[in-house]
Length: 152
Image 1 (cartoon, rainbow, N blue to C red):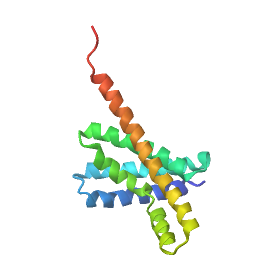
Image 2 (tube, rainbow, N blue to C red):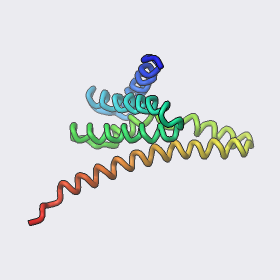
Image 3 (cartoon, helix red, strand yellow):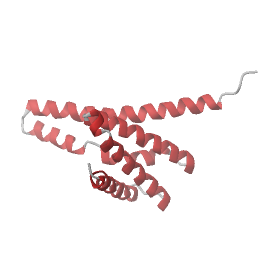
């Protein structure tokens, strides 16, 4: 693939995260750039894993891992809560289209399409949640292990 194929979607995700940073009142240009950088980095991971895994659910999982690790690291560096970095950076991966089409099929009475899109959308949302949970739990486990007093 061409470099533009990877570069432009990441730029769009970066710009979208800048907009959400304004909406969530992220203070300072550095905070906005960190949030947007996480969104662009997550989208890059999503695109780079496509030829390897051939499943958008697994791609979302790996992107959530990268975004969570980025957010945890930047929150530690800036001594800020990780939640704001994480929420803004995850926005490009949220399955909004899947939610819309799931409801459209439900309203139109298309039961089979409704169930198919529902399960796919839940899979995407679950992959994001598990990716975030895995990194957050690992970081919490590591920090609690390091804070524990040494045995004498």
